[in-house]
Image 1 (tube, chains in turn purple, brown):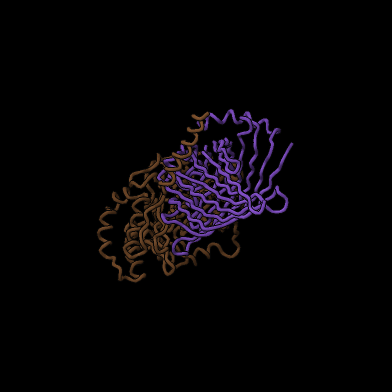
Image 2 (tube, chains in turn brown, blue):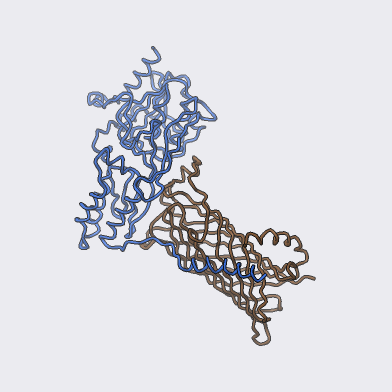
Length: 261
Length: 345
């Protein structure tokens, strides 16, 4: 259903010039990270990571203004060690996603709920530079996700505060993965393909991304100070290789709303 | 519209519920003596690529190895004792690419060269090189008195560029032939080995096949992919005779270099068997942090034969004690005779 809805949504995105309001936010944070890639090691690596997120939420005119477009650029890096702290590894992830969200009438001005399909692209992985033949299994995927956003506004000393929750679940897509014992030499020097692009679905890529934020108004009413938590549970099982990346980041930043005629 | 909303909510909730209940994790062994033993055995069991071949050649039974060595492990052992048992266990594979690294030792089975004569004397080779030899990208070379080029390649770890090889061959252009001495070259980067070899062929040559593990089963392998070596795109391609000198310490990428060179019509391999090492090594680790290396990718020769236990030379030869006493290198002398004879023929 998400796919069926996409073409019509793309058409409506052409009338962006009629956008009534947009919200931009920039957040930065960090927190613990836990990563596993059985291409490199059968053991999880743990450590700390940093995350940068930039998102834009823009209302569209389609469906009587009940549809909005949300885009998120997400960059994270992590420095990790094995259980014995004698091997270092580095995790990195870059994701860009764009969602079209349909608002539901909640019969409450304070509470809004919207959901819809999302397209996302990701590149990242875990690297351990102790071997030239299997230093990392680059993870890359393009997926159709389902995403939902919920906002709740409330007043504190006549200023409007807002709590926001976001939840995203990948549905299906295409993913790149090296094969079980395939070396970098075979893949990247000889170019030997061996089922390296696989169909991804919730059974082999059961993942979850969520974010909760609190907007605290500062200065003029268009700007807010934002604090929050971003959690990601990215997992995959491709070509008999297992991968997971669990991150919990505590974020701070700001958001700014822009009004247009 | 309500139906669409319901479907979208279901499309969110179904995978959400699945994701929340589906943690992707790997069973981990505890960091005990037995846990480390089992972890190492399992890593090899699921990833090592030569079980069938070693069963055939050296009667290796990996399950029997587990039974035999598990009796030697107990929780009262110290690190040295555990390391010794684990190294002996992986030593059963008789593979120079299988190693266990700890902070205090490097476990290995180097019987591929330790059980054989070295057939190399560094001091004598230095007499041939003298003081006026040239060095280019790790290749030491000079023209010997009888107008034969001599190139010593000690490692394929250093980057070797086509330009460097061409400069060397241009310098030797007037020579009647060239000797490539790869004795004691323990390998390095395959690309460097292939770059050097590509200057000795005029045609694209099928040099072998490559296959990797595709799963935990001992027989799970990808379809072997052919490997070709193309002539060097730029620079000089050597058209005269070549003798490649080998010994048991020619391992890994050097083994592959010899595997390629022996296919060329103007090349003769002279010396002792190479050491082998046709598996491409991967790294992993066991719970106590010791790093294990193992062969994961099989590289066959052009006839789909293993070269894991080495390649026989065209002209087998052992160093003569009499020559050594006279500060002569039997291999270099024989190669010179061979090249002189060929040019006279």
